[in-house]
Length: 255
Image 1 (tube, one colour):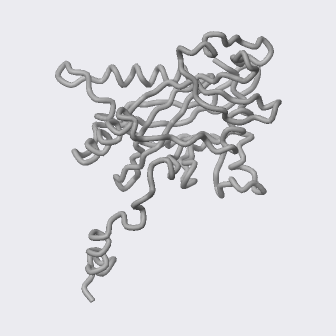
Image 2 (image 1 turned 135 degrees about the vertical axis):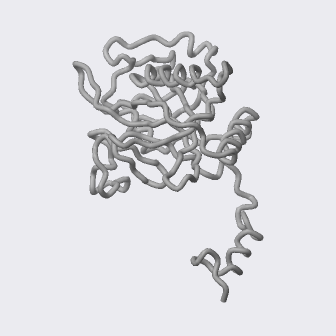
Image 3 (image 1 turned 180 degrees about the horizontal axis):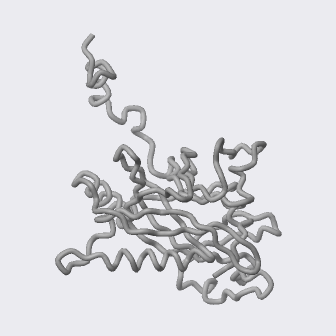
């Protein structure tokens, strides 16, 4: 039987190409979970062997993919292409009341306008007693070592909002012949660094400018995702409950 690239039989490779996507005809974006990139903190379940979320070999400060559990060392980081940015107003039940994601609010809604900051917790509190979390969502493409791309979301909140603003500023500063580049024209390296204040310590994101996008295929892949988001075709499912509880137990204090 003929071989294809010394790995798979040519007939099988041809069958894969001819039947691409078969079995997924009725699967939409709402039926899939888009990975998030997160930093493993001191109390993260990824470090607890008895927890189902435990990741073998992971260390505090490592970056991980919430779907595949792939990790990147804090000092090495991960290369990404930023595709789109959205700021969201998310409503959560306070952890003291059981925690949990409630939904997304409009930035100009009365609920958001009437939110007040709790002097004890530093959290913004809505009229109904739930917490308002301002979240910067960066839609990205992870650039793997073999050059393949994977869609993901990097969300920043609380103290990380200042990092998000810095990243957006870096992106806007990138020019070519005097023209502002598309956000996905360059890669950026995401690392994690130790941070803290008088209330505790944690690992924060660190952003560095990388190289130009490697190929027109990668560029077009990012452009297609950007278009899908802008058209509202990409629907993001609510974060898993364990992810929500981890967020709400973060040692970070609101920025």
